Length: 264
Image 1 (tube, rainbow, N blue to C red):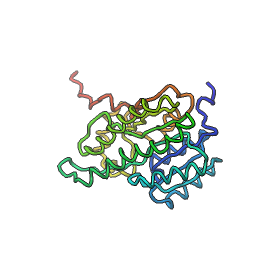
Image 2: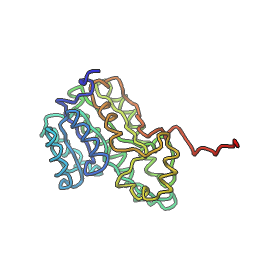
Image 3: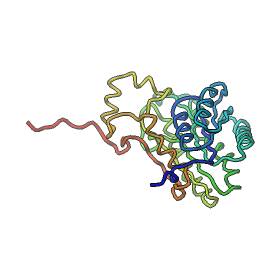
């Protein structure tokens, strides 16, 4: 199989939310596949070392401030990105947040923070980037979702609602923009340890329970997303659009703890 099928040489990728976590891993995977990068965070200073790392891989990189809850910030970031590189070929819509609480404790402000960041912000970033893609009649948009888009979990009501919305939005935008040569897909990780949820992984019993429900018997590792994000970004995935690609070790199959054997 030719390496060209998974080459991003000459492409420019914009990855939002790259100050830490899975955003950095996905951006790194795209750079290793050949893409130049625009990376963003609410605070640009948090991107300096990662920008240097990307440049050390032989790729061009620009770091920009972005607050996805502010429309002017979104529009300015896209203008600056296009000024730096001339165009954007790939968008990885990764910026997001979570507030983990029982449903009865969720506040009005909690709801707004999560939905405005994960759903409204993602839409308007995609809209701003798509204008240039439509003109060039080419683009790859990868919205980062979650297994919570297809399964419900206690304590994750607003977050699950936002990720379910991302999945539905992906399908709508794929239909809207397909005629311009733009694919829009949702990459949905399962249970990965991140800064947002690391406290859960300090509970040994919870980790054992989680792994028992995952057919692959382990949580995700950041490298498990590398090939998926590159696949959705390359030219050879041109006929894949409107899809949700779950990278979850199989937990979305509905696997449950095995019953003890009754045989003696």
